[in-house]
Length: 130
Image 1 (tube, rainbow, N blue to C red):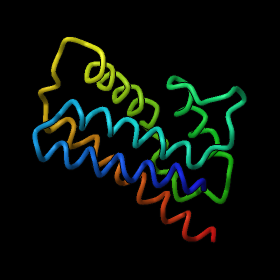
Image 2: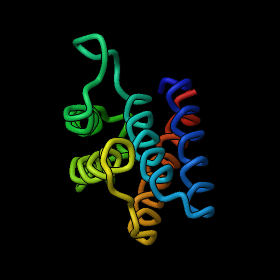
Image 3: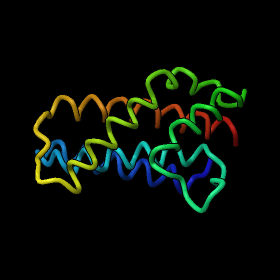
Image 4: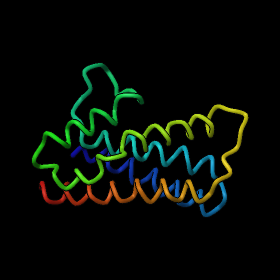
């Protein structure tokens, strides 16, 4: 587990939660997405190109978790992870680039909780691997 990306994921998730509490739904959605992205980076090796692409990181993450017996504790997250990443990416685009506002607080809370569960399991694996 790459600890720098794990730390970034944790930081972004905390910012997402704080933003949600303050009613800053766009900031919450964007930071939740990047928390998920950094969490997946923490498990993956270097990308074949210079950086991970938003469209492919979730698929690569699922493949790695499925193939690596040391990551068995993450397998429960595979179902729906590609969809979760796609949905959060779409919200991040709204939050960061469009002339729209995110208004569904419960939806963002659900995403935050799902990313938080994944992050918790990655941290558990990280501690076990030491």
